[in-house]
Length: 497
Image (cartoon, rainbow, N blue to C red):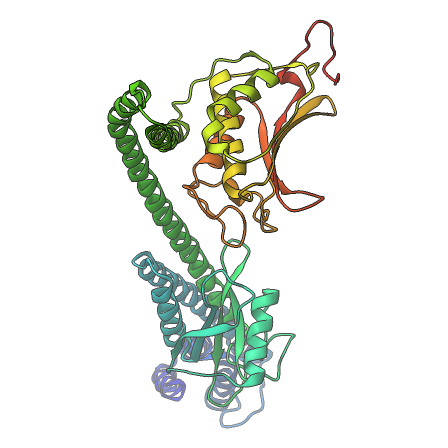
């Protein structure tokens, strides 16, 4: 095209010179020079400028058909042609570079926007891994593989291939080590990075909440560096988008799980409330009738005692159900007043006299202890459940000890049994609702009693703890009474006893 323009301009110059107007012919040669410089770069622009200067010198500068220049002003025109070629080439190159950069940014933004739209439609991790491998492979024309721990969130487990383009079932040992290193350190590995460059794959962690959730690997069939430096920012942006989508999916999974738990708790509370209230009325009638019957023989007395004992146990179970519902629904009311621990322990033991049976009872509560600011009903239920728990899960004829001691400025009220004890590490879990621990002395029962003790104790500003005895076998359940819940008696200090 530059040669054609030079020929056309030369023909026009010949026409002008034939009419005797050869003054501004040099300006005509700026047309091919500017065109070549702006459109085709520095080399073509300079070659066209030099060719234009030679043609103009030979054909239009006296002496004609010679490279000699008689008039210095004509030499200036030649210099201008070559200079114009250089300047136009430089400016044209910058314009083309800016256009390429603008197009690259537009392509990058379009890729990110399209990728973000596709991510918004996903709600499962498996779909995310497949989309990530497929789109990265398409955008960069590379092989891709995505590895993640299975199950999710278990960072210590081995990485499993979740998706690949083309389909990949196994990585080499070196590639697997490189992927694991990228996951553990949250840094890139492989060609183009500063670690594990012997791997054929370039692995990049997929981050979500500053934690690596997966690893993306990209590679070429010839094992060369898969990404150029100007491609790495786009890949980083795509992975950031994937990390945001992963965080959204994780949040949705947590909300779904939480919704299921809340629905389960609502149904359970409704069921417990229904059972408790529907059984309470007929059971009260049965208990009243059993207490009113007078036995005519020793055998009938024994039968009535057994029936009353079982009915009272069922009544306590239903009361536990109702109290548990009150705790969970926030309907628990308390009326704090000073309570004597000796009287509270005696009342609880009296209500459990049938349950305790052959168990030896040891009460070690000093009479000069301060009064405890508590709800008498709630404290009574706590003691009944703790003592009943000790009798139920201890040995058949084992002793049950109730002991009160000063602890710093507060008090501890402990119930001790002689059973197998609690399995190490389960000291907190034993207070969960419907919890019965295998391999310990907390196997039987409904799993409500200790949960109610914890709820009632917290409602009164106390804490409850579980542990094993330091000497001998058995479990120790302790009510921790803080100093602010103590009231001195007749001038006896809080730390007395």
